[in-house]
Structures are given as structure tokens and as C-alpha cells.
Image 1 (cartoon, rainbow, N blue to C red):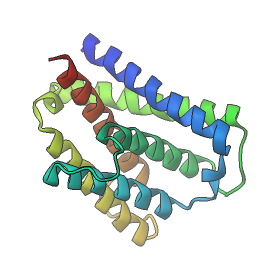
Image 2 (image 1 turned 180 degrees about the vertical axis):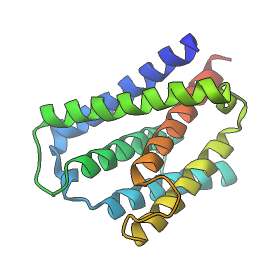
Image 3 (image 1 turned 120 degrees about the horizontal axis):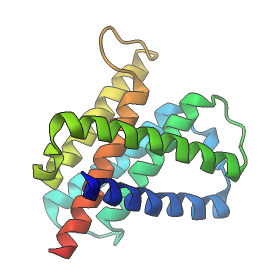
Length: 180
């Protein structure tokens, strides 16, 4: 588990670095995005990963790793949007503080689930992690279509946290495959 904690923190640091650099370039323009648009952006990234997994052909040249990083960052943006509604920009300092808060919540969830599930994700195929993200996207879209109301399911935030964690797991698995 200690190995996982270190790997997780390393992946989040990389994702945060991308988020921060894009923040320098674009500010927090993403704040104008509605949750549905953020979910659709995650769908686009996951669909591209799935296409690359199925075809093995990459015509755009962007890496699968970069797409998983984008999923982590879009999920974090979605979690921020849930907490701080509205579409006005916030300072990058505030965005980074919220980024850290949300990714720490995902980290704590991962620790709890890893305890209960015994790190089963390490035995999963990368394509299965992609499929889990796709399923969570479809669930999130349904909840959004239901105006956030659920009868017995977790809400949008729980789905964003799970997608974020599946993307981190995929990034860890990709990194592990480079080492072997």
C-alpha cells in the first residue's frame, strides 16, 4: 500500500503541474463550463483512449497518458464546479487550493477502497479501467439528465471521484509497464 500511496501522489503531482501550466496560459476560463460540458469532455477523452486501445492507431499523436491526465483534471474541475457554483473566474491560487482539496478527497477515497478491495485494480487490464470510466460517465450523464436526483445511487461527485481514481490507476499502470 505504501508503494501505491507514493505512486498516486506522483501521478497527482504530474496532473497538477499540467493543470497549473494551463492555468498560466488560460486562467480559470474553464469556470464557464457547465457540469454537463465537463462530463462530455471526459467522455471525449475516454472515447479517444478506447478507440486507440481498439485500433492501435494514433493519428493525432497525443498520448493515451495525456488523455488520462486530462480526465483527472476535468474530474477535478467538475468537483470544483459542484462546490463553487457559478461561472465567474477564480484566482489560480484559489483554483490550486481547491484542486489540492479535491485530489486529496480522491486520495482518501482510494485508501479506503484499496483497503476493502485489496488493490484489485492492479490485476485489471488497462482497457477495463477505461471501460469503468466510460460506465461512470454514462451514469453521470443519466444523473445530470435527472437534474441530479437519484433514488439509491451515489451522486455526481462520487462518480467524478471514481473516474479520477480510475484514471490515476491507469496512469500508475502505464508507468509500471514502462519500468518492466
